[in-house]
Image (cartoon, rainbow over all chains, first blue to last red):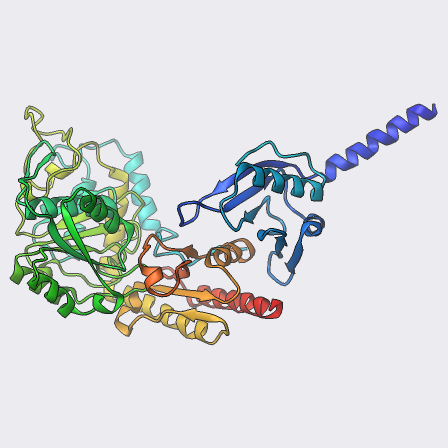
Amino acid sequence: MTGRKDDERDREREGQRNVSALTIREIALVEDCFEDSAIREIRLARALDETAVFRLATIGDLEYHPEFPRPFFRVRIPGGSYLKGVVGAESFRVFFPRPPDAAELRALGEAVEAALALPVPNSDR
Amino acid sequence: MEVIYLNHAATSWPKPPEVIRRVRETLEAPPVESGRGNGRGADPLRACRESLATLFGMRDPSRVVLTAGATHALNLAIVGAVGTLAGAVGTRDGTLETLGGAPVRCVTSVLEHNSVLRPLRHLERDGRLALDFLSLDEFRDPAAVARRLRDGTRLVVLTAASNVTGARPDLPTVAALCEEAGAILVVDAAQAAGAFPLDMPSLGPRALVALAGHKGLLGPAGSGALLVGEGFRDDEVPPLLVGGTGVRSDLPFQPSEWPLHLEAGTMNLPGFAGLAAGVDLVLGEGVERIGAHRAHLTTLLLDWLEEIPGVQRHRPLPGELAAGVAAFNLAGWDPGEAALVLQESWDIVTRGGLHCAPLALPALGWPSGSLRASVGRSSTEADVHALVAAVRTLAASSAAAA
């Protein structure tokens, strides 16, 4: 009986985690006016909430503007990249100091994953 | 939140109900063989041609060539002009047989859009064109064009209103100089059409004017026109595309008369029906009146932006304000980032970047680009006020962060 209750509790915890988990659908190239864009968009399965923004802040310095109609965040991460977006959106952007290679994208994905407790994104863009 | 649209220099929005209705009616009605003179219903191409001819003071609507947009029209104009000036023979099957010789000398400006710059650059790369550029200061000075014409320039390609700064050249004077020198004038009127009065006869017989249908003329994207001066023979503006015309199908080559030789393939009937409705609206309200509205809002925008610490902005001359563009930058915010925040946080649509005019922004001292807010016929003082309030908040936030 005890084991069964533990299993139920585990399932319940897993369910709660799934409800709150943010998953990355893809990391996409965002074209800008220059030949090699250094901007990528991290697309999520659901909208970012304020809690998620504060989790992202664990990987850098957060500048947060709750006074904007949709609160805006800018996280400066070591190496000079920025995460930028708004609460309530299903994506945010990464502005690298130069066009990233696959390793840099993977590192960024892992950092975001660690911050949001997400699986590693399956993308090299 | 309601979207506040201040990106009319890219494309006008929302489209007027009359335009939407005309597009829908064309899609719903039984198809007519437009332009062939044998349909039972209204002919959208003819209506569009006639409305454009009226707006631009042209006697002959057949010299209004309907195109997929300003880029298409500019390619026709530039390739045709260079071929003509090089002594090339435009053949009716769409090829251009050049007779060799020195490249054509052409002057354009640092304010041009890529729809001008790239066709010119391609011809330059092929050795068919020698390019020279008017600087920002020279752009408004006909004497700078006159100097080039004295030095052998035979092609002048200029925007009628910059999509970044709103700056305008003195086109009638430039046109007179070109006529005197035997040069061809190509005008990119993508931004100017529907904002400033533009009279084709005032540009002389050897002018080619490209229009976008979806900006100040209020039509759908995918519509535009090339206005051809009365001094051009049909073989001086050869087609870039050849194919079906629906008439004279027994000919092995493209029929030669205006505008048929430049309108191969099935035309965008709903698009041109919508453009005709947009042009009719502009004719009904008056370009001067619409221009005055745009100039008023641009003045308000620039005046209010000037009061915000950290804003750097370019100020057009009074006669250029109807272009409706305000280019500016904000300390602490990259232009692309500022445009993103305005859209994502405030639902205000502007544009950040180079605005497809890659020489203009560096010339203005903004190599990373600028923000650009642009107003149109449907813009209001409330729209402008909302943008200024948002920019003020952005400026305050960056000042606080600093």
